[in-house]
Image 1 (cartoon, helix red, strand yellow):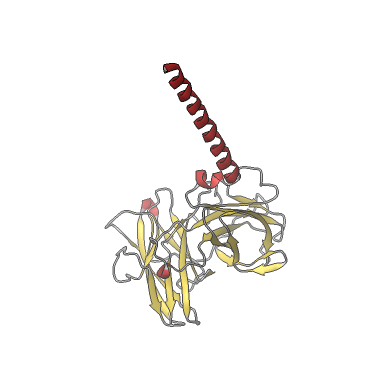
Image 2: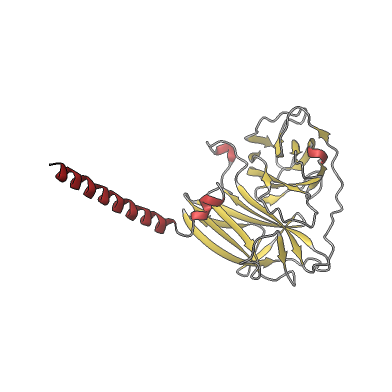
Length: 312
């Protein structure tokens, strides 16, 4: 009797092990090529940016071209749920058009299903001065068709992968330096934080999240920003988009702030609403030491909590 029970238990264990092995193989086959989405980030999507020469090399924050219209590549993978993704390219922190499949785009939209993987070839649409090197920022945004004011999920600043590079035409070229004045800011001492924060509390330094702001078409309006808090940084640039298009801040394409000694600083950003009524998602990013030629840290930029602008 004991031998029969022992044999039965042994056979049962063998069947369980075989079944688990089959299930593991099925899961592995299904997720093949997408496993790094889970292991390398928590976004559920993946973004890579490279040239033909750098594709199989470690990323070091440098994109090297011979001419402004040489081909570049980006790769997008998505898993878990359908997403609309958008790509925007900035040269010297100013949004520029790109050409992809002979079509010019200011913002390139991707409709990705839950098991998506695609590489794209593109080039810059407008010339840049090749006698100097430039900054090249590539931003992939997830949920670009979603409005925070209409969504029922928690507000987030984890909706993008923004990768900053130096665009090199010759190793000995100097790097473009912006003729942009530094903003007047105040040091925030009430609390510690880092990154970028925007809301409508222009008379104080509150950090209450703003899900929606309502303004009139064409109206100028103001937001409070807080930025900095980085120990290894002396200056930051702030970029804001409205409806997936870069918007001027204080009459400039971007603003610069001094943030020495890990300071968190606060200031006022004046923006102009679009002339057409509708909903526009406001998103923003902060670039540490923007015109430093060393981009080897190569980590995604910090983003602000996105919110919706309701233009009436």
